[in-house]
Image (cartoon, rainbow, N blue to C red):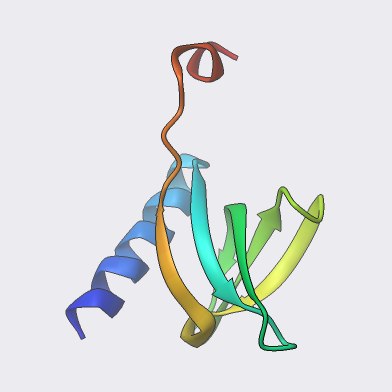
Length: 80
């Protein structure tokens, strides 16, 4: 339960601060993927995020997220 609370808090923070997250995810074909996303909208069981891999807004089921963490930005990215 604690992990779910932490994940929801991280999603909310990404949404409000427009910051990128790195996510390990099981897709609809049961493939594990790693993606960089920026959260656009949060629902109870899923979220919409701009996926930098696919270059468009995608829907992600929260239950399929294996790991999620903030992207570590380097000095040059922070100035852009």
